[in-house]
Length: 299
Length: 324
Image (cartoon, rainbow over all chains, first blue to last red; front, side, top):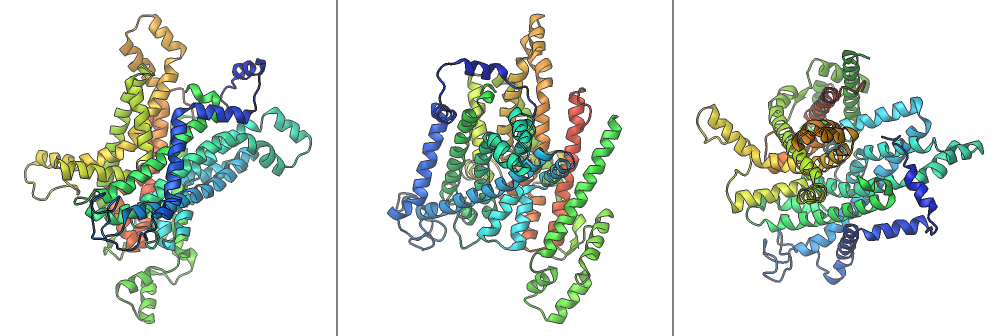
């Protein structure tokens, strides 16, 4: 996969053109030509505003019982109704969204850090180091991720920190593979050889020469990882393995679940919020993929 | 390297991975705060220090780490995964009792997703801008973004609450009487919703993959040759192209298997399907460590076996593949 045939014709044709714009500007314009990606970006901005700015306009405490339980949306003055304890669902959606997004982002950063480190060292050094690191990666691929993180959370207590760590620690394998294959490809290129002949240190070559050039597919992968970390957190809190004092979208679903046959909206609404968020992120991911890896567009 | 040699190497490597899983689990559990004795004492509503020490003695918890680890690993080699104090049963028999339900759910949903996904992918590749292609694109977005428990719950609301066509949960109905055929129908009736839910994620993945892979194969020279010599469209698509497009699909299906096991945990919880996932959640909530470790071990075992089977399947589909 790593050593796919280089696409000479495309780069030759591009260098023949007279007008050359900055690669970044080209990337941005490519992204904005993709309507689905722009829609995803707008959707994500709307959700972020709702979650972080919304509470200023709707300052209800999501833990406070404000009305009878299971008041249907729009019927008794509560836009999204109330949950099984008579708490305002709209407030829960806002505050819960902050937690879901924060955990999604920080867990993705953790897996990004582990994955890039493992992949970069494996791809750069090769030989025994690569063998050992890739075996290590394979080992984590064999463990059923959700079960493993359930065990971590159960053993070390359900707090925001353990949940974030548990998600980050189990979901880095895809990044490691992508990073490694990019490093394997790039380390053979001429500019790396040039830097090497200038007696650059390994450290410099890895982080200053190769990594910046390996970033495009890693960025795409990282973006998808935020989405799957949000889903992961939702699944954990749905199963009841999250901090009970912290509200998140998954936790709202999990706590209202016993009553779905009577009032499905308490579960359908937060689930829809997760769905929209992850959908927006993956639309952006597709757009980024097209903008950053133009060669793959035909696929 | 011959086929048997490769296979032997894969199996040996799988065994090493399993030992790794055991050591990791055991280490995690011993560095975590609290132990089995504390949990038992907690269930008893608090216990005296001497009683706790007695429990530690009985379960061998006062031995040094490496001796405990050795006892556990050698026990597992004899298929003895320890004793569940919560269920009061040997862990092995507990797991073997629940395993068939999980395997039934996981394999039926995977087969459904692969067959239907391939079919959709082929139809979409036939007309890259047609309506089926659009459907595949929508499916793949939905499949990635929809939380699996949410789609499961929506199905329950739709087909249990609004249109009561299916049972809410469980695997069989005790009130159903009759021969094996009626029992089987009852089982399928219960299986339908959880199977659809678990399959939905992977249907999205496989249909998108099958489409991409078919499009790539359809551009190859030998397809043009097949068309040039006048073969009907159906023969070209399903005999020549599909066989070569299946490789990536099988590879991904194999790689996905540990994620499928994870998905099964959630789906089983939503539909109260009496499998390993439900057992895992209950034993985690009860801090029944021997059972938790046993389940982690067993599900990793299943994943490794499936990975080896994937390798064999790949070689059967494509004889050009030499070694794994």
